[in-house]
Amino acid sequence: MAPVGYRTLAEQVAGSIRRAIAEGRIPPSARLLEFALARELGVSRAPIREALGLLEREGLVVKEPNRGARVVELTEETVREVASLRALLEAFAASLAAKRLTSPEMAEFEDIMARMHDAGRRGDSARVVELDYEFHAAICRASGHRTLFETWSAMSGKIRLYLSTTNLMYRDLNAIVRGHLDIVAALRARHPKRAAQAIQDHLGERLDARAALIAGANLRRQRSDTFRESRRARRLAVARLSATRTPRGATPR
Amino acid sequence: MAPVGYRTLAEQVAGSIRRAIAEGRIPPSARLLEFALARELGVSRAPIREALGLLEREGLVVKEPNRGARVVELTEETVREVASLRALLEAFAASLAAKRLTSPEMAEFEDIMARMHDAGRRGDSARVVELDYEFHAAICRASGHRTLFETWSAMSGKIRLYLSTTNLMYRDLNAIVRGHLDIVAALRARHPKRAAQAIQDHLGERLDARAALIAGANLRRQRSDTFRESRRARRLAVARLSATRTPRGATPR
DNA sequence: AAAAAGTCGATTGTCGACAATCACCCTCCG
DNA sequence: CGGAGGGTGATTGTCGACAATCGACTTTTT
Image (cartoon, rainbow over all chains, first blue to last red; front, side, top):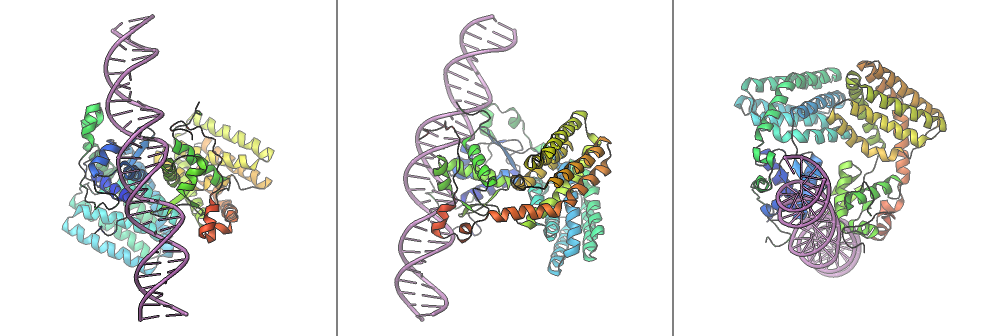
C-alpha cells in the first residue's frame, strides 16, 4: 500500500534530501554524492539524479558538470538580496491583489491570520513563520499574476527551508502578526497603494534582523569536515537519511 | 577532436532542442518524446532526460510525471506578465546600477549602444533585438544584485528565443535605439530615479505592441497535428534535429 | 445505448554496468 | 626546494534493458 500523494521515486528522494537539509543533517556546501545517496536510500542512481535536478530547480543545490551537486551556501548577502526582491515583488503583488481580490480569497487571508494569531499566542514561532510564508504566498497568488507567483516561489524556496529553524522572540511574534493585520486591512479596503506600502513596511522593518538571523543560523551548521574535504572526510559527509518510502518499482533489493 | 566549449552530451542535446524550438522546427505545446529524440540525435535516453531537465529549468519546456515533456506554450497573457515583471525588476536594477556603476561597465553600455546603432542603420532587426536583450541583461548585471540578475535571467529566458524571430519595422528600430540612449544618459548622470523612470518608459511604451507580436508569431507556429495528437500524428511531431555533435563517450554507433 | 471493466500499446521510470573525467598524489627533473 | 608531468582512485556521464504506468481502445454488462 503506497502512501497517498506519492508519485515517483525521484520525488520521494527529493523529499528526503529536502528534509535532511532543512533539519541540518546535511550541512550547507556539503557534497551530495549520487552513489552514497543511492545506497543510503536503497535506490539506484537514476532517481537520485532526477531528484538532484528537481532540487536544483528549487534552488536548494547547485550542480557543476563532472563535479556533482552541493547544498547551496546561504550567505547573509544572499538573504538580503532575496529579502529586497521579495519586498519589490510582493509590493507589486499586493497592489494587484487589492484591485481584483474576491471574497473567498479574502476569507483565506482571514483564516491564515486567525491561525497565525493562535500560534502567536501559544508562542509557537515555527508555526508563525510557516503561516507567515503561507500568507505572503497567498498574496502573490491572489495577484492573479501567474508569472509573478512562479518567480516569487522559485526565489523564496531557497530560503523557505531555513526559515522554520530560526527562533523568534515572543514580542517579535506579535509584531509580525500586527504587521500582517495592516496589510489585510489595506486589502479589505481595496486600496492598492496602501497595500503595497504596508507590505514594504512589514518586510523592511524586519529585514536586517532576519537576514542576520538566517544567515547566522545557516553558517553555524557548517562543520569543519565539509570545509576541508579530504578524501576520507567526504565519506562521512553524507548524513543518515530517514527514508520512509515504500518501493514498488523494482525489487526493494 | 571534440568541439571546444563543449562539456556533456546532455548540454549539446539541450542546445539542439533549444535551437529547434527557436527556429520553429518544434512547435509550441509539442510533446518531446525521449525515445524519438534519442534516436534522432543518436544518443541514449539518459542525456535526453538530463537535457529536458535543463530546459525545464530554463522555462522552455514543462514536464508532467509519467507524461513526459512539452514545449511551453507562450500565450499573449504570459508575454504581458513577463513584460510587466521585467519592467519592475529592471527599474530596480537601473536605480541600483546608477549608484554603483564603474567606468568599465559604463564603457560596456556605450559599446552595446554603438553596435545597436549600427545594426539599426542597417535595418538588421534581429541584431537590434539581440543587442536590446544584451543591454537589459547588462543593466541587471550592473546592479550588483546577483539574485536579481539570476531571477531576471530565469524569467526572460522563456521569451528570449522567440524574440529574435519577431520582425520589427524600421522606425521601431530607431525608437528602440533612442529609448536606450535616455537610459544610458541617466546612468551616466548617476541619477537612480531618472534611470528607473527611463527604463519603465522604454519598456512600457512598447509593451502592448510587442506582446501581441510575440504571442501572435508564436501562435502561428502551432500546427494542427500537434493539437489533435492522434496516436499516429504524434510520431510526426518530432522534428528533424540537426545534430553536429562529436560523440566521444561511447561508440558513436 | 450508456456505463463499467478489461486489454493493449506506447512511453516514462528505474536499474545495473561500463566508460570518461577530474582531483589528488606521487614522482621526476630543473 | 619548487614546479611539471604522469599515474590512480573516486565520481559523474552514458548506455541498453526491464518494469510500471498511463491513455486509448475494445468488450462486457445493465
